[in-house]
Image (cartoon, rainbow over all chains, first blue to last red; front, side):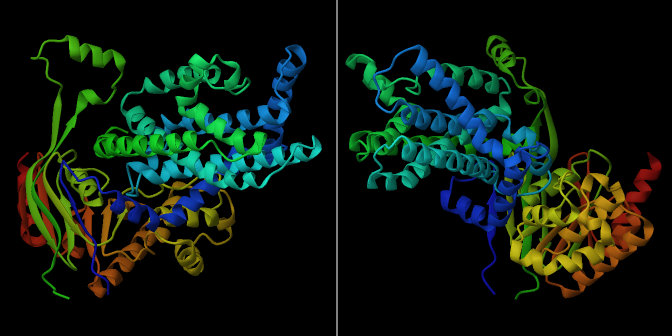
Length: 274
Length: 250
């Protein structure tokens, strides 16, 4: 028989990342089932069901494309692919972050009755978002074949960038979900900030059209960095900008450590509140 | 393994809830900052300096009036909540059956819920598939298992929940009033299952109950909590007698 696990809790339980993820791993079946439920519930009852996964990005793409390429003129080559990458990556971010603040209150039934690592709810939220993202991203490949855009081996960076993007969202969710459960106003603030951020992120325009003086500020904003990185490998077809990649990795790592520390400090306060 | 091994240990545990935190919003933060110091947030002490030990294989009942802090004690053992002061030490895997039906999804069928709910208790999908037949049989749901849970009566839901939760092979089993659900026949069946688990002497059971009869018949030890404080720990006969006497005087 294996040594029994010993858990000691005081009002200052130490922040042990390894313990947290060992626990999370134990609940992997729950994570899988929860993610499945998330995916099944999303379009349950709608006539077209899973097809909406393709239709949604296609329709929004059509609108943006019509407005920005037909009404205003753009000099960006293969604008359709360029636009699609930005919109998809952005949708992935806001689908996850838009629900992060209310994540714990809306799952109060689970959280106040049964013990499981709260991180599972966040991972499941991101996993279902990432699956939808991958499905709609597959349309980009079709689009590239149709528009005869060059497809290079640099596309192999894509899975790595999705993982990196997911970790960044995970860190942000750790912060938003725990603070948001305590300060209920946060979800309204975040929703407003997100709609502002849409314009401060080069989604429909290119960061290069901004004057060189300010372009770096745009790129330092993580939502912009990740979209830039996606475009490097898909739209431009070269390797990701090394400086930007390094910057985004470091940013994500530091942000993760801070937000997970905060999350852990608030863990029991959150479960007492909801 | 040592029979006298301590599985659950509370050392001077206190738990305080800040009632003003309940509806925390921006306005209140400002109010807090602007207000003078003497307007301290209201605090509710749910447990006050409680210490006790529970040994391996024991079946323990926590008794006390409503709001005495027994459910808080159970939440601290389960790891759902943490103490404000003091130290809680738990040795082994825990299953908490704090509220049956908590993890059931109304739009999913009973069968689908076996997996969703079972994995919520930390069981793997593989293990659950091997137990599905047992769960369906024990729950007495029969054909109904393939219908959405929202069509179930509350008794059926409780039966399904109990049948799933009982499959966990944990070292510590926490039960909160769950034996009060379902019809008499099913309650009897649950108690029987209970005795089976007890006989194995591997599992430590902690339950919160209002039924003194259950505490006396099924438990080896009773912890009595009154007004957030530990009153007494001892044998069921002795404590139940004293408890009844005190309650009569009130």
